[in-house]
Image 1 (spheres, helix red, strand yellow):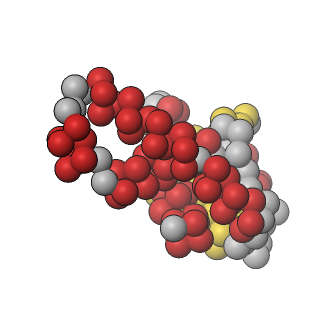
Image 2: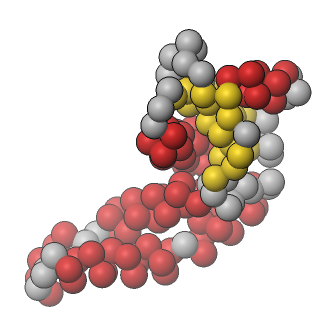
Length: 139
């Protein structure tokens, strides 16, 4: 088993603070992408909305989440140690590997199963984690 990522908020406040701190980075990313796409000022003003910047912030937040990656047995052992957690698992239960993320302040977790594509599973899981565990908290 190993972990990927660097942010595992233990409190709601820590999650909110990190989300807020990512605002300027999201604005910079969007501005640089718009520049690379050669948006002129009118097009930039029309297309780069607060919703676009918010989506960039959501993606940045999710991309930093720390997730565990391991064999099914390792996930099952972890799950057995968290009887109070509500765990939402996506994917096929018959595949050998799982990636998961828990939000201890809510006693909720999400997991995604995978056979070969760890990176894709991790990114899918992060999007699921943001949507299920953090979106209502930070937006």
